[in-house]
Length: 179
Image 1 (cartoon, rainbow, N blue to C red):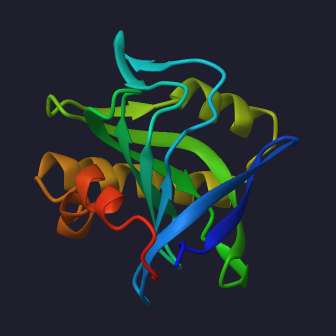
Image 2: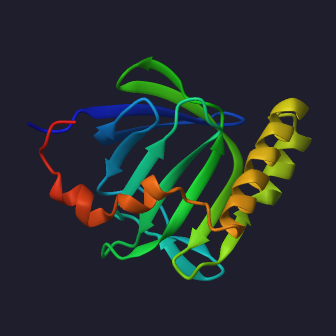
């Protein structure tokens, strides 16, 4: 039996909305793990000149109900692990078990396969706050969440063990199994 497909509306202020369809490979009350085997990117993403994600790259996503972040396990197009990426976002709103939405809050935390921990997109965050796309309360909560993840990363506690346990090989080995 094929995995169910989750449809995720991902809002990016001020006016962009993307729809992502991802295979649900595991779910419980703490997290939903989805898989995007072929990421539809327009361009390669880099941190400090290093490729972190390319068009066609596989990504494993961890969505945590009630939390202000999700976590992606990133790979290059050849399937080589590049690192962990946390989007700071509004807690997911579930319309059904397979349809949900969230809003990007601009800040992201990157932990590369080389161990380098980086806060990303601060300029975009500052612009969003300055333009009123994020209110002060939401902006403060986003900054606090990013700071919390950075501190966890510095202490060796980000990503959590459940993320590290879900490798690309494990997800690919589950292909076609029910959740």
